[in-house]
Image 1 (spheres, helix red, strand yellow):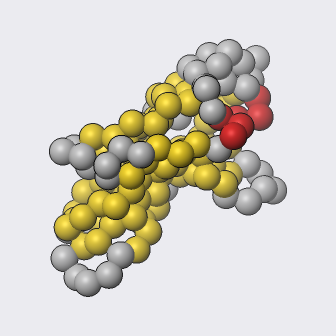
Image 2: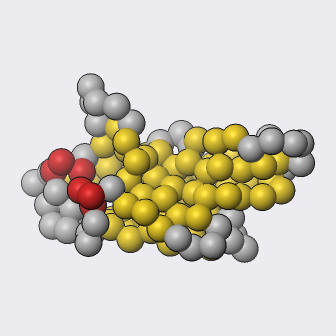
Length: 120
């Protein structure tokens, strides 16, 4: 069993900042990558940022220069620093990790989601 637990969402004014955290736990053999996706009402779930185990990061064009993803392999955690937030960043943010447990094979695991609302 693998669990991903997110924290750090909330309500913030436009131009403000938030930091999301996600920690993985359970029968983990290898974490290949961890990242964040978001889903606004009536829209598909889209990639926000992803970081590999060797610290290569990728970002959606809409967040480049404003968001920073970082990881801590020892803590099996990933973080998303979100600055200069805009109302269009409002969504449920989901943590995702590509993990191999002590069974063969690799699969994606998802957190429960944390709400981020950007509004004045």
